[in-house]
Length: 129
Image (cartoon, rainbow, N blue to C red; front, side, top):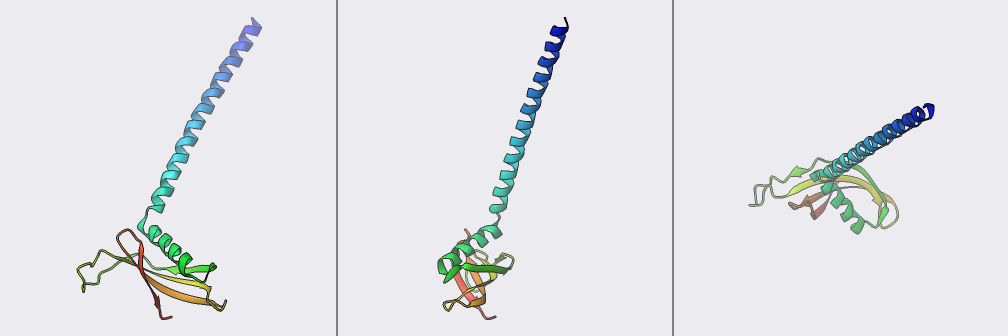
């Protein structure tokens, strides 16, 4: 009789442990999926898309991209130039960064980037410091 009670307790303990592992696994999976959705939502923000495309532009156009250091970013601004029929269809961001020039010396540069509706860089203009 003592062996039956002991094996019954072991079986109950085993079922409880398995149930806890299942609940814990379900909870971890749900938390991981929610975290992934938050990361995707963060990446989908227009400012992040614009910054990504600026970095891509700089990668293709700087003399030494490995020396690039971001200093500051403006907010993403909607173009309000009323001289064209396209006002509001474009976006602008200003970016200040440090990178090596052709001579290997570090230089601080501020550029104005103009984006289309999909936040692709259309024009990059170097500003006077």
